[in-house]
Image 1: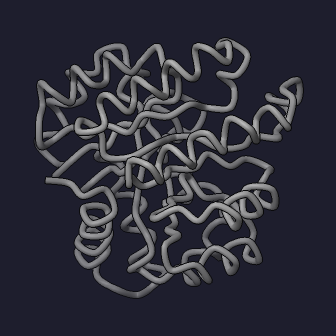
Image 2: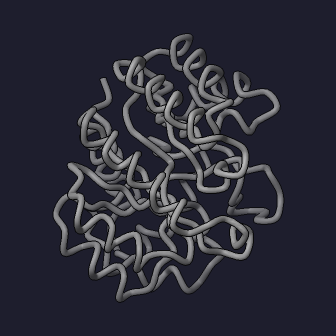
Length: 252
């Protein structure tokens, strides 16, 4: 099993999570949302090489905390460590209530910076998109990226159809599909070869959604649900989504 998106920096004891995951998982792909966590994640990647892989990104919420100069410095930092990462993300747009104080034009500007960075480094782009699919797709349309992953996808069937029209766009479903019934309708429509799985842990625990108790191996709950809905073996879901992740992120 491969957890294609989690946040090791958000665990109190990330190394304990890694060690436990070694019993169940093939790989963990941890995504940095805040630049301050980049060093920790890269150190973990170095210590657990070929098991922990890292994406470096910039969550829209971080705009409040960093100046333009600091963001550009961070982008240069990413360029210098490009051989240690497997993707750019999570990055994107967030028009939800929690980000309503952030200027949308500024958000779009920074999003474009990271799209261009992913293209320059030839790395997949891992998207955070909340209540902003229309603008996200519009921006991507004008700046084609090599591989695009819609992390923790929660969009409509109409949005899904638009995404699947693009051969280089992929869907990542998180463990919230277990308890958000609306999302189950999407599973039938997503071809298995365009799908990867994630937990977004420690958030989105399929057994206890309101707690920070999700773990990488709980990806099995998603795989089980998908196997039931698609009427295919559990092992096929795990094998195919893992192969997709390996190919997308060029895991070695």
